[in-house]
Image 1 (spheres, rainbow, N blue to C red):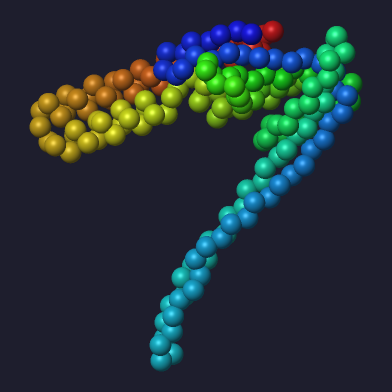
Image 2 (cartoon, rainbow, N blue to C red):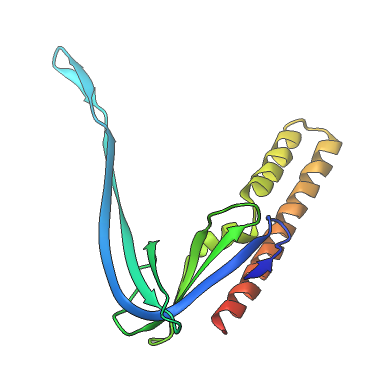
Length: 183
């Protein structure tokens, strides 16, 4: 277990499990949603509202790994789209925030094929708390609406801190991923 203390997010512990793939499976789930339509007519004229339909495909990977001590673990992963088969050596990474009992998967390395699967959205959340980010944006915009010189100064300070937070969290995330991928 390795503890990471990001500058703009709560600390978390890194966990990993390495082993040989005993079995793997993949399922695809398509979620379709739609809305709109309808309309009205009156005496031969009218309108029809546009229809919007969207679909999203979610990839479900299931792995069964057996480590060198013979311990077996199963992993259910979403949207990694892993390419692995029985006999491949794989490491699965996840993190758990301090004070929590569950976490999220963020990476899988297939050592047999030298392929890395990193959930970029999840790693961004690991290092930058969106509440801090959006809170500063809200503060900057709401003070800027006041149209006072102090409001302009506060908005500029908020902009600077937003830039600093993004830059620092990106650097910390890149260093973290480089360390993970080099092991």
